[in-house]
Length: 196
Image (cartoon, rainbow, N blue to C red):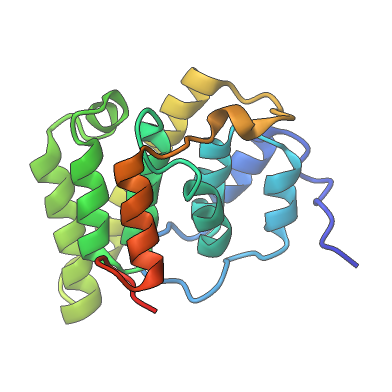
């Protein structure tokens, strides 16, 4: 039987408040914090950027990654930024830096990182240093990570609303030819981060 939504979380606010009680997404989790929440997140049928952010808060990176793959070129800057956050959480720091760099001039990035790109990249570096060298304050970095995603959620909620979105196809971006070719090369063994 498929996972059913938890009736304790029938609204955006109910689920969001619960997700904020979970450990902050910072280091590669290995698995979702609460696998049972995946169905509850999906059942709300939120704008895909909000759904991605909720999956990241639950450390459900496969579900988040499935959705952001459909929002990885302009004008989907929110999805692109979330793609960077996702890679930061999964420990793919160079890829995270690339996504942050790609959206650094966008309104959502400036809203989230008002001090600028250098602060955001410094944050990624400090998270990487914690993971690789066990240096830095995990507690402080968890707070920064949570603040980052809360600002993204605040932005997306303001822009897209928290209502159900029965047809999310309008949020998907068809990549231009350059991005399509780059993605194809990454999967098929050409140039890129991932070769098979």
